[in-house]
Image 1 (cartoon, helix red, strand yellow):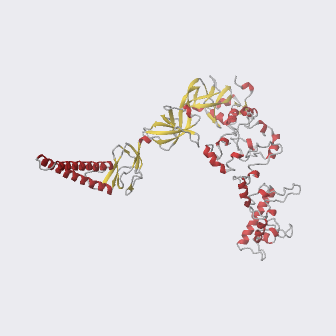
Image 2: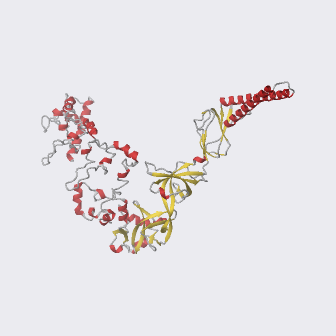
Image 3: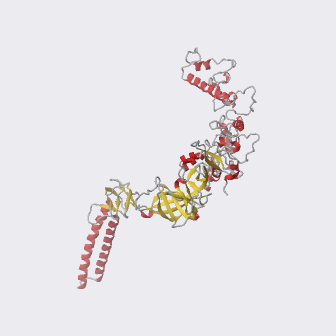
Length: 637
């Protein structure tokens, strides 16, 4: 490692030399001057390294392409070229550092700078990339052939078991499913719905989302557990300092906390699965050092009794307007907006005027109405005259029939003209060419993109009215839990910043399909909103009641979160408290819990936060008590 760092450091100095000469400030043909030491190193590189030696770049002078860039083409042509460092590959110090006298010689085909065979180093030889991509031997994550990629395929120790053939050690997933190394696989996993967008891996093998169970299960890991330091006993270097050298030698070491890096609870709090973490929490007890300390800590308990707990399903949800209570305002007849009569956010009643528009088509329709009215007047007079003449036998019957037909046609034309103006919202009493758009429903004007002078057509919305007295809450329910729900089930919505306060509604619709991306089912509830507290596009938490079950009622403060688990503390004897994993239902000041509890247990209320601090991984605690492993004598009967 020292050789590597030195080579890179000297390489950086050499690059300064190149920059010096390229700017024209240093000339090799002139004697070096004081203050240009970097240039002096390059210009007078005849040192103890030999007459043919560039000390500035630690390569033979006859091969130094930094001092002699005119040599570059011939080395590239011969294939002796490191594109990563701009030097001939055969003498590149970072890729081929000079070994110490007692060090074993590296293989001839080896790039020490990137720890891969030289013939497969695509960083030094980028021209090799296409052939490895074409053969499918390519790690897009690290820019190296997959078969020799050090992060994905680290060299195992001599006594380590061989990994599976289909395994990407760098990302801890099967190689055939590693979308980080093989991004071309992404579309097929997305199409099948097996995709974790959060980590960019197939959901079925995503290590953070689906950690693989450890051989032997949680119980086996708990047996091998140091409760005092929250690490496996077989890896606890604080209790067993003789283990330190082997972990240091393997590189698995956290010098800050004096523990193996792989299990250090401070550096890797999520190294263990939730099931194992939960089992390990219950494997410990908290013991006060002195009865007086317990009293001064103000620990208070309550004796629990069985009760009925409302079981609920907690899911994320989003709020939207009720589409059945929403109206979009558009102009049936194109026109220019001449007047806006309501402000954004105003409450309107059905029939209230919203916008006034001027339209040449409306003006034409009004003119046609006047023409139809005049035609009806003339047709009525002609019909009256023909009837009088026909009664006196002065005119023929066909002339009367013609007058009657003309009157009927004129009347129908007038009715159509009046209806067209009514539908457009225009008045038949004026000839201004203006008409009004009125509110089709009562509600709040939540959007108003219309402005004065705008050309309004049926393609552009002028405003949106919504009756916000009721809103839709759409919940994303995991597909395996959706079968427990039905129409009419109660949904309680908790707004951000208003924990403990609920707004209730009922399920009105359950989707018939599963979202292929999230594997959830959309469940919609109608929730009353008389005070307007629910806002569209707001993200909330929803609890859906799915039945009742047995449990224990405890104060909300008694339940504490430790890692991914919720716990209560039970006073087993004076000064001794045991954490118990529980499942919480409901909200408010008192909640129902289920877990390894019995009637009459003394559950801590005041002081639970102090006990939680003591058992948290990596916590130094308050110094008033000790965390110990549970003994067989303390096991539950």
